[in-house]
Image (cartoon, one colour):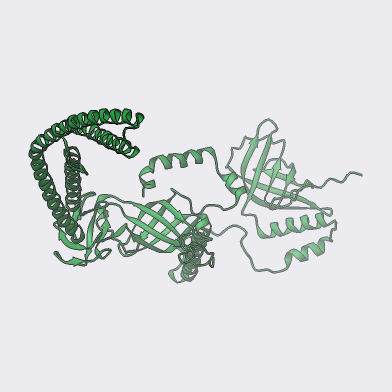
Length: 544
């Protein structure tokens, strides 16, 4: 057996096909093949055709337990079909007794029971408070003023307003906790640099004053370096000493050059003397040789003693040695004579050497040139002892006055960048995971009362984790504001001057998902290209 389950009926009244005869505008009764407490459908209508929305008078005849119960009602045609001669009529102002009778008939018919006519009439005759079944138009102009529901209207308005407020507040909470993130620990900042004394010296300001604006590269103040100045003076004295030495060496060279002329004459004389001595010794050696030969013959004839032969031999050898010594001196004197213009030998050492003296002169001259170059470099360095503006900015604080003697690394002034407003936001480790580089955020400045856009230029999660003592990263509590996010304000020139460093700010970031699955689901190629274009267009921000 197949069981068919129909959907619940959405009609206001039950639709019946029980017998019901209807007389339309006094014509012959016609059977109603579909009717309910709200209206009916009549088929086979032969009278004058009735248009839609036209009112008709009806006489209903309801067969009830052998009786024909009839009553008059009014209706309006809501649809007609000429092909089937059918009229669809809706009841208008159905009388109460007729409505109760039809309702009782429908209930008993649906429940499967039928009561006697007496019971039915008794049920109908029960006195009840008449209540109209049609909606009350309730026009305001027909109701007295004291009956207007002012309290109801006011309470309705109150609850509607309260509902709008609650739902708006819930929407705001949803947006602020799921879509955006509000960070109140933010401050308007700019690059501030402390300009210090590079060396020990005296401050020489160049148009330096608090509030003065400078362009990048313009001089802020000069420094008179005392140590460098002492080095310059010492270098000058050293150059003077070297010049004196060079002058003395030149004078000695001149004197020795003049002496060399006398030394040449002496050398020539010595050479001639040696030549004369050598000639005399050679003649003496020849005489000694002849005497030895004569004594040797006499010895062979045993005319003289052996001692006389030995004396002759000794004299011959002595003279021969003297000849050899003079020949060596002659070679030496001849060699010295060839270089007598540059050198002089006093038979022990070279007392004068003009070549060595020339080398010494060149050395002294080169040393003076080197010291002069070093002096020029020191003077140039002294002239370049000027501290310049690292970027476009202004002087906010001045710690010293001009011509003050200041030690090295002593702070001179505070220099703040202008033309580029930054905001620094401090986040904890969970919040920084939901911030994206080059995203656009909203910055509200309470002190000025307006909101501007800003672009995220830097995200530094570990800035608060650096252990300077051990030079390493040390993890801290995740709730601490240890992450730093830098933003650059996108402001126009007319409001740029009003924004100064140090103002409190509230930054509203757009949350990013930290889930890899959601990131892959929501990230598209278009988003990637947008990020790349943001990187290209934000090149100036990358240089921060």
